[in-house]
Length: 141
Image 1 (cartoon, rainbow, N blue to C red):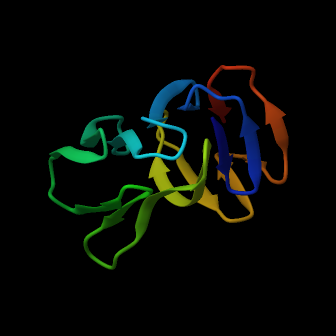
Image 2 (cartoon, rainbow, N blue to C red):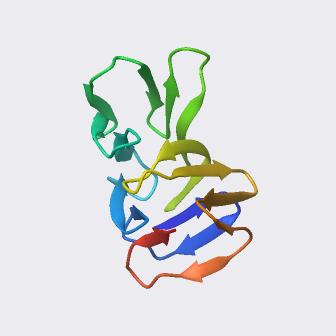
């Protein structure tokens, strides 16, 4: 599957996104055209798990501050107060998933921000890169 994160394209991925060395997001497809299945861990500033999404369903939401909406081809997690987007994932073509928007904390306590043009975490940023990960996971940060 190909993952597009911001404007960066990662071809031939296993669907796992490692943020600063820790697998924090996994995207899978039951068939090339869906349904989209997302596993995701939301952490606080000290690295504690505050919410967990398993198979595109909220499995744990400690502070009850997150809301999840989904369709067979998309998933959006927002923070209840103000509707800030934590993660937006969409299946846009067979075997192609796009993460256009997101803002969440990594296991190292840094904020990972994904915009339509780039991703940035700590002092690193990437924009417009096309990488073949040869069946491996995507590494950010």
